[in-house]
Amino acid sequence: MIKFMGIAVLSFAMLGASIASAQNLTGPQKNAVRSAKNYLSFSGFSRTGLIAQLSSPYGDGYNVADATAAVNSLSVEWNAQAVRSAKQYLEMMGFSCNGLIEQLSSDAGDKYTRSQATYGAR
Image (tube, rainbow, N blue to C red; front, side, top):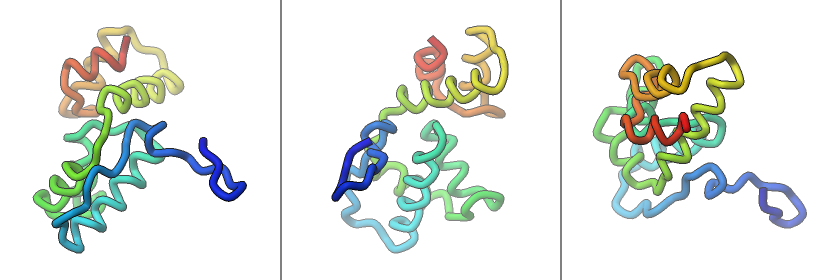
């Protein structure tokens, strides 16, 4: 938390995410950036999972190119996101280390790279 004019504000740096550059983004891409920041403010996401959430008809419905451009414009520490996701899973239920890695890296799960999932689980 950082204090801004006496108000506690959650820092995106603490979440492992910050805005790198919004140059050359279209209106829909800028909106997708706002959506991505919102998702990252309350939950861990992999790069692929965040793009899928933004572009899903059950999520935000952005086209894949706009969702990808938005996520690419963010500077996100994906290992830190994997740690957040792992902690969220462990708060709900028990996992073996290997089971957690599988959940985090599965296409049906969080879609982290195997390396990110391993980092997050350990």
